[in-house]
Image 1 (cartoon, one colour):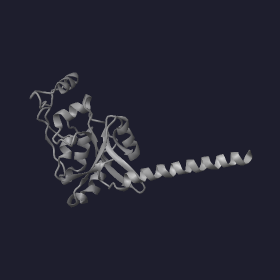
Image 2 (cartoon, helix red, strand yellow; image 1 turned 60 degrees about the vertical axis):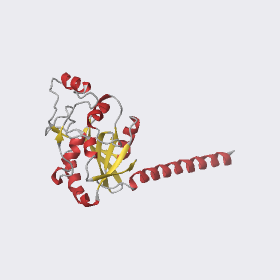
Image 3 (tube, helix red, strand yellow; image 1 turned 120 degrees about the vertical axis):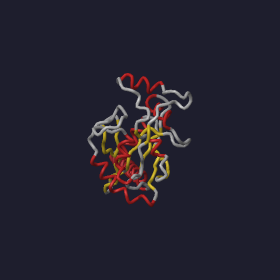
Image 4 (tube, helix red, strand yellow; image 1 turned 90 degrees about the horizontal axis):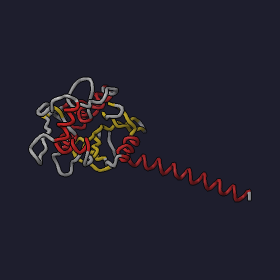
Length: 217
């Protein structure tokens, strides 16, 4: 009996050890092909705020995004610097970031700066770190005290002109009129729809000719 129990305990220890080895290998495989400064775009949902953002900003058939972050590697650790409704401008562990997106049924697509622009990444990451701790900009109107996701990334690369601000539009391409969601959204805030004001969005950033699509995580 003792021999059987001992063998069972050994088997459990081996199984647990194998599990953690496999878990570590999976984590390493996720980040091993990623590079410092990679941009992580999160696919948009079809409804709600996510769908409303995509409705008035989508530029490419294969680019339908509502969020973006920049990757930072520190030794064996990998983080995502991004601005989100929960916790504002933050530095989040990559695995936690991916888990959050998976829980919402969204995918993450990796984009990377083309070789000739890779030299701007250190400055962009330094700038992104300097913006951490600021609250999220729920109005999506540019200001210096809070940031929304694409705003955070555009600012990180602003010195090197990787992305650019463009006049925002909230017009539904199907009707040619202001999207109902956005009219109600700004009405509740007692604000005018900021049609034509400068801003940015994940789909606009994904359309930059200075970056290229790499793969899905």
